[in-house]
Image 1 (tube, rainbow, N blue to C red):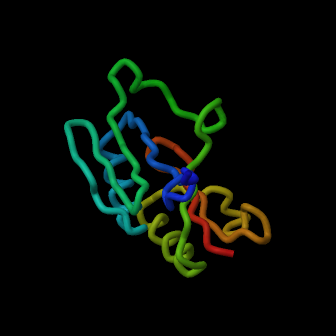
Image 2 (tube, rainbow, N blue to C red; image 1 turned 60 degrees about the horizontal axis):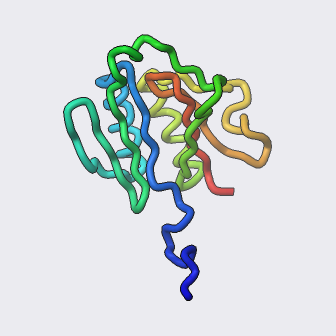
Length: 139
């Protein structure tokens, strides 16, 4: 009998789906950011887009009208943040500058790039919906 975890994809994240109140602003940000990380656009449909890299993909959907005015906050129960692997510390530094150029708020600026502790080299920022995103260099 084969172990189901022998498949290289077993246990990896399949996809994440985010709802956006301002779809155009969010799709502009995620299209840029995920493109920088090597994701390719997968699908487009009315009010939605997805990007894929390897077996993992991210989906962005326009929030239903009756919920679009409800504000997201990462400290409420539910999703706190998304963390992505960076290629290197130089990659984190370059992306930090690109994020600043795009007007994205850098979180924990006083402790950047070690806001996660002395052994962590990362940039923390927010997407247009204020979802916290992290880009972490390998140790």
